[in-house]
Image 1 (cartoon, each protein chain N blue to C red):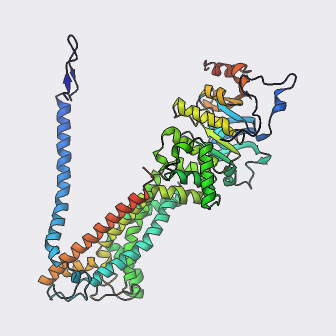
Image 2 (image 1 turned 180 degrees about the horizontal axis):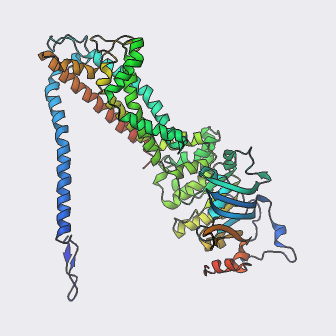
Image 3 (image 1 turned 135 degrees about the vertical axis):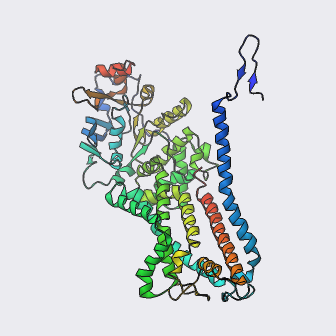
Length: 301
Length: 288
């Protein structure tokens, strides 16, 4: 299709192209800048993935992922495995999610549905925003001070620290998702004689569930990779500890830290392998988030 | 289709009264007695001193220019204004003799009897079936057979059944504008309300969809009392038995404005023989 045409004798030619000049230049410039920004953003992402896969893939084996105990740093890669750390990460992150997601969703519901513009809601929203900005190591120190000093190291302490990190993210994402639910839906439900709780549970939350689920799982994925808050709370041991409520525990992220700071070939390989395992776990979580979101939102399109 | 259970009241272009009998003696029982109602949003007085009586099994139309408070009055009838922060009501509304705004009255219980259809169709992001079953479910009906029966009956009443019966489990958001609005009507009818309030239900619809909804109103009015807010005066003449004309009253000194009820009468009188000049000007298109 030509963008120019001559409709007939005696009539002006139609030209539907972008006029040449400053406007077209600006358009081309902006397009180039956007593509460049996209490529530049992609570079570190691809490099990180490439390096981790390149250096970690050779370490991954069933033995590595499930075997144990974690051998001392000096031993070669073939000995033992990171099984205890995989179990520890699942335990601690899972418990943290169990604590933070229900609480965070309820917090978000309170802020948007019940609190309104009351001073309490405003204060809570402010504090949760502040909490988002607290460095994760401070959360670890906080739990160390109020929990470890009294009850000793344990997986649950690590879970507390991770839950503190996840909570503001879950609150914020729930709040933002609920804000997007149109008021007309609430009104429609009220007009049928629903109570406020009923409106919230049967209309507002289902309408926002997709976003809440993906926001929560992203928070979980982030928490799973956190190292600093766990350093002070689980102590990072070598053996599997399935009792999350007592005794020192271990996790992939802290094992990466411990192994990567050791000058031995085996330790280095274990660190890369753990890193790849951790990225794979986060990746699986995000895929689950996508699937769940699609499932929950099948009526919203 | 449901047949009207008894002869409906005389409408436009039908002689209003038997010889020597005043029209009011035909009046069906009152459903709402609105007495001296003023509504405030914060310090703004949206409507002032509205009094009217709404009768059973009739369609009452509220007409008037924008900002005259007709929707506000409509929303006081099932306490939807309670949901607006800062809204406040003065005056009395009795619903079948009970004070609608008495302290012991639960707005939830009120709204289960007095349903509402909104200007913009607002189907829930659920399946068509779940949309209609929503009201019965929150009223505690759980049985599958019972819900199936209610869903089919409501969708038939709303003249939507034939169009959606094969895709009841599809999203309610996938319907066209007119279908979505009829779905919302079906949803309101599913709880077997006593009164259905309609806030400009056809303002976003084309004439064909509008016609279907008007037909539907005529069909269901033997079972329900309907109050409709409309900007469309032809619609008021076509569907309603009585019409309330609202207008905006401006106070030049304090630069405030408020909605007032100008005239309330049988629809034929409002449109053919209005008593007030403002009504006359409005219904003939000379809006003053």
